[in-house]
Image (cartoon, rainbow over all chains, first blue to last red):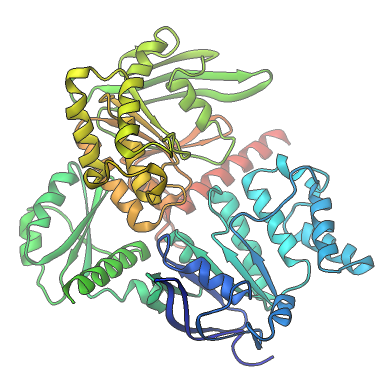
Amino acid sequence: MSGPMIEVRNLTRAFGPVTAVNGISFSVARGEVFGLVGPDGAGKTTTLRMLCGLMDPTSGEMRVAGFDTVTQTEQVKDHIGYMAQKFGLYGDLTVEENMRFYADLFGITGQDCEDLMANLLKMTRMEPFRARPAAKLSGGMKQKLALMCTLLHRPQILFLDEPTNGVDPVSRRDFWAILYQLVKDGLTVMVTTAYLDEAERCDRVALMHQGKFLLMDTPQVLRESLPEVCYELRGDDMRSVRDRLRQLPSVSHVELAGNSVHVFLRAGERETELFAAVPGASFRKVLPSLEDVFISTVRNAGAARDAA
Amino acid sequence: MTPHENTVIIDKLVKRFGDFVAVDDVSLTVKRGEIFGFLGPNGAGKSTTIRILCALLAPTSGVATVAGYDVAREPEAVKLHIGYMSQKFSLYDDLTVGENIEFFSGIYGVPRDIRDERRAYALRMAGLEEKEQTKTSLLAGGWKQRLALGCAILHQPPVVFLDEPTSGVDPLARRAFWDLINELSHAGHTVFVTTHYMEEAEYCHRVALMYRGRVISLGTPHDLRKQLRSDTLPEPTMEDVFVSMIEREDAALAGGKS
């Protein structure tokens, strides 16, 4: 099909007095990796569940793989894979038995099933572990198995809810290498995460807060989007440096990280005051991290709301 | 204890479980007030090392002292001088915030005459002054985590162990938590943190990367990243460091075998 794989217009979902998702609109193109980032309770999981046809919206429209999520739920389900935070694997069953179980659920049988399983096991390098009970797999391997089970019916769109929580960096990188390979073959991916280094791996990211999108763009553009200019300074006793810099009128905020601080100079301010505050120090202009952008944006949104 | 004194000293530490060497000749020291990050994939030996440092597990050989006490010879003294907080917070959900603090004050043997003061400190630190009567189960993740940290330091331990403390917590709560850790460090507590998140490793003064029972890399996050800098990778992240050190180690092992 042509056109966007996911199209969302004015999506809203209320639970009694709480509006979990509040009028969001976006679209995701085929082969795109779209990240949804935000604090707990921002509305990420609710959004995913609605897109998967597991929950109806209060208002708004959603088309997934060209189908309406409310009136064509079954078609939507045929075209998507959903990997929930606690994906249901059977600990007593082996890797292969878990996969056969899900294949059965999807009605995939015979040679088709054998070929698909062989391909997935090869791609994820899980072949040597096919006879191991799921309960005995490491965290990273469990994620891979869950991913394989999600892919058995050849979905066109994959929804992943915080897929690598508690998984170590090597396994996480492995997991993403597999995703990129799938994306190259035309899969569209939408992923939620609370970790900004994970968000950096997406083509496009939306920052969600209290049911709304505060920002949406590529990670690079987002990192360049802060009105403040960020300087890094490293050395000993950065805590007292932070406390001193916080007092400066030209400084919006200062973040301490180990042996370094990130200082955010207000838009339009000169560096003179900042540089004079720590004589002899070498300030280095750096691009803020996605986490810096996220925290500033959420704080500013909070301040704007309090002022209103 | 004087400033700059080493509060954690590990010397040629080994722990074997049968044929398996979980900790393989590890030596390192951590200074007073330092925030020390302990990284590594699952099964690298991090938890075993921390259990030994908390005097919950005896080493096979080698020496470890924590806050001046030998973990093998003075385990009870070690336990009185450390705080421990795990990713699965050990709080009682059906107790109120205040009751949890009271409970842990008892467990840690906080003297009666300073209990009120320590309780006030923990509440203030966690930002829970208004929520003393709230049932713990009703707190959001970030609050719970700060309460757990508050409870872990009621007895003013010189060394605090945090085992994946911010797992499943959102970025704002995580940064607030790290502000707290910085305050603890400034007050002289040594903080030993394990984490899988490399952006968190950046918050540490120094990090050690553990793999197959050994420390394969040790330094400030900045220095470790600098070592990896190259034309193809001008701005390596901590994750790049982590992955490349482990690949190097695997390659060396494979080379040694052939």
